[in-house]
Image (tube, rainbow, N blue to C red; front, side, top):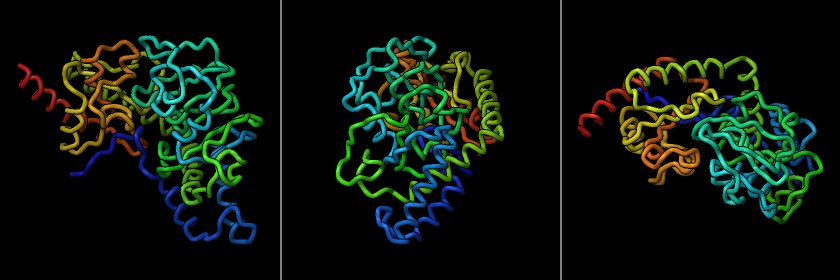
Length: 347
């Protein structure tokens, strides 16, 4: 049985361009801080990747600081700033903010003081997209980068968090993108790497993969790949809606990522669905990968006003460029069989 991977918001499959760039970087022996030819070769890989990420993100002229991932980028951006945000933010951001901003039933957040606020561009669980206010201090753009036509320089945001493995790069590398002249306090101290913002020898291999993946993701976006994915997502939701009139598709009437479907069937636990679908050959999740392993109702959905029973039923399906219409229909068929068994047991 061919397994079908539909958990791309957790980690997207590694792009062949990223794999090739990483393999090539493995043969470069120098330390990027060294001044000899070998060191300069390693430095060249990093700077090429920095330019690739900046170009793909519409951040030419901004500072791109490579980190171990968006979680570290969040710490670098948010520590000591006294920022406020909403309960829908990723845990990596929530660790540094006060949750003073309210979210409405459609998943939208009102920001009264952008200069001291953080607001994600797109939510990993629901896919709901926000309108970012001018002058926003920090935005988690991890899920949006590569899926939406985003240009950092046009957003009016001071700092943005991005991660390689959400767009087909390797795990363990990300970046903080900052408007030039922005000051941050280094959280990892020692040497002067990454413009003095992040000490430690750079992950040359991972960074090479990030740059190649970002470039490939931008090409996919320009070629309309995600428009096709959105059509497949809508076919999946229509098929499931025909099976169950009790099921809710979160954010269906709001702007969403083209690949994300958050499916609530109150009374049917999300983790039960995930396990059953895993056995049937599908990789899906019950929410954010950083929290789905914990048996609890989604705090994102509760912040939007869903009760605990509905929030605990969440099933997140996140498609990728490789997903076919047949994959979506196979998932709907398997889900239908499991739903009928659940109803029979409940009866």
